[in-house]
Image (cartoon, rainbow over all chains, first blue to last red; front, side, top):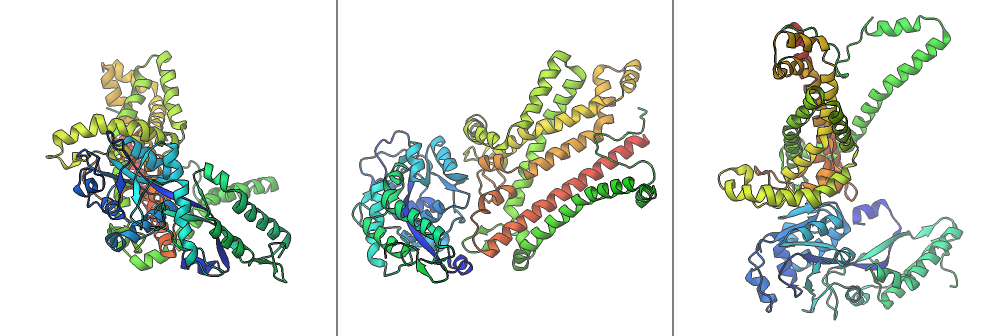
Length: 270
Length: 335
């Protein structure tokens, strides 16, 4: 939630559960190697400044690939979505031009391209149109077997989106989180080794003070169990478990939640 | 050709017979019987429920749209910038997309639907008319998301390869309507899918209206030596014209409000271009796309105002329809 929304819902905590990655998917027949893209080149493609696949700036990043002189068709999400938010957040982080002209949001004013509805719409449009490039949640890219670009992270590595690379993106953030942290902190353009740069948290919204203690304890049990045992199931759905030290911080934050008139902690065994 | 006064057709013109206005209500009330009075009161409540609901919706949407009206004034309708990040909202591209895609749909659908209705009522043998009529009505029962998916996977690629690309290559430089690049998803794809969706409505109503043309009118024309073509063209169709116009407006109303299918094929780009191959955006689509995740009061208000405008456009279209039907039936009545 942004500040305006937070002010309408005071005392609500954002507790991360898993991490999601946004994959850059493309359709380029004849190119079998994965394409490598830097943040700036990606931003310029979505700004409409790079219009063809054989642009020298793309070729420079991909020495072994012979690109066709095909027009690039940008495909974006039209329904307001977190996926769009994360992707535009990343482009704003890596490209001053993007930040100034477009910015970050769940719906933005796209400088070029076609809009499709939902992850499935973007995936469908990319798969059908030669020369198309779009962004989808990692799970959709995997399920629809689209080619995904290796995106350069802040450390200069080109990383393919994967569950492991997404977990790695959050690993570096632990130092920035103080005691009783607010987890509304962006993890795009992460720099750790093997970190995929277009990633974000998925939150549960939990009130910091709950009414009924019986319900609150059951809720705490569910959250604890998901954080400690849910990782494997998340992985199968292409969502990444939190790095262990971040998970411990989230569990610590959960212990600060209280219930009932006497404000008892909702996590037992304290 | 002499013509009888046109009776009520397909409910388009519902002129009440008998005592008019409040007098009718009073007649019912003066009955004295308690059951009759309860009966009249219930019916009155039912009758008033719809205008009340209409007023309530209009009021709530209007209230929610108020912040955007204050902020942008008339500029909301004339501006073509839509940038939620910067808080700039202009509805012109959506109005344009809605009107152009719906008009395109009408242009494509009306000849097909009327041709179909004429064929089914005037020419087709019974064994052929029944299955064709049934298939047409079946089209109306398909959910719009199915049309949308079919549009994405079948119609859009076909339009791109078979229609848009060749036209753009040959005529794109001379005619702005056909300027490339041809991506498939476009105002044209939106218009075509809407046309397919509204054909069943227009043809079903037109068919009923044509079937209602009195037999003696047709026989009189044939007896005067008219050919089948002349009978259809000069007697049946003019007689049915008010109803056909009503049917067309019914289709137009549906095209204006259609959301799901057109969102999936129109390309969802808030821009105004002359080319039919360029992506566009409709008012109903932007509401469906952005409402769920709109953050900020002004953003929500802007979307509400678009809803209000769509409401307004629908009312205008319906008023024009009523006027047209009235004019046409008046003229054919006098002739």
